[in-house]
Length: 80
Image (cartoon, rainbow, N blue to C red; front, side, top):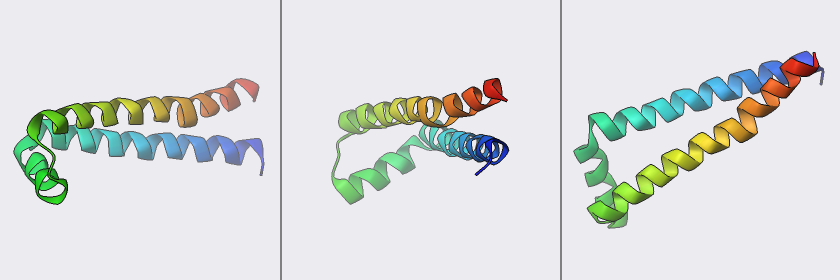
């Protein structure tokens, strides 16, 4: 696999993961009742735990995007 192919791979991974993160955040802000009701019905999580888990999940997912997608892309851009 060439450096150019790896660079494109990490760029697309970053973009797709950011779109998924924005969709998750939009659902959380735009339809919190729907999302909370769905999670409560499936897993029986109360509102306080849902908010804590949701915010923690968004933060960890964002950190994962930065560490495992964007930073390798940036390193490949610097190397080339």
